[in-house]
Image (cartoon, rainbow, N blue to C red; front, side):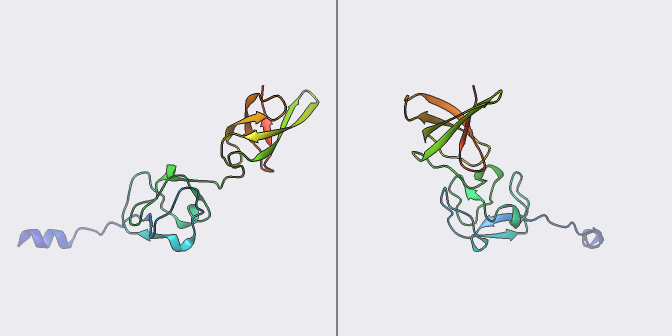
Length: 137
């Protein structure tokens, strides 16, 4: 009987919420509002807000009932593998443009491998917001 009285006076702890998939979300799929929901549970490393996930692209498969982890989603890709891209090299007032082909897939700000179509040289570059690749030396 004493235990029941003590439990009655324990303050309620507010539960954190976790974003959970309501359907299978495939890699490279843009996450829509009907594909996720909030569950009253706390999962370490998972998203806690819907607006942080909706509109993002799945990097891995996310199955129904599973929490959406932080590494499983990211910005939608601007450049796809084998896509023709503009390579831009800029240094000390010199600006060179060339035709290239993306050897990877990524979003703005990510580094990917690219190939110069004319010389067949493989380089690394950073994807700019307009979809061109900034090649660094």
